[in-house]
Image 1 (tube, rainbow, N blue to C red):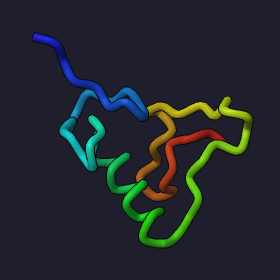
Image 2 (cartoon, one colour):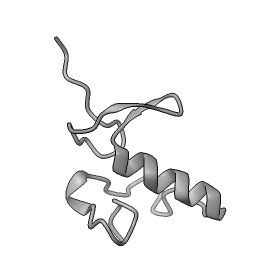
Image 3 (cartoon, rainbow, N blue to C red):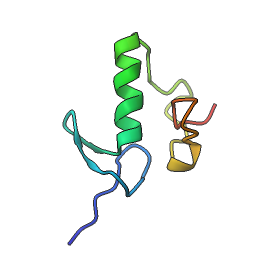
Amino acid sequence: MEKDICIICGDEQGITSHYGAISCMECKSFFRGAIIKGQDCRCTKSGNCIINQSMNTGDRGPKSSP
């Protein structure tokens, strides 16, 4: 059986389909909040943004590096 991982940060816990993408609850919550607030979540570093589960602080929101 293949284990699901979040396609955004690589986390292996709390994985399910959110809005058509396999993701964890933290990524789902971050992107949902960003959409509601009208924020742009695209990488501003020519596609070289680092996104992983170690960047999740729980209070800063995005899991991408500055």
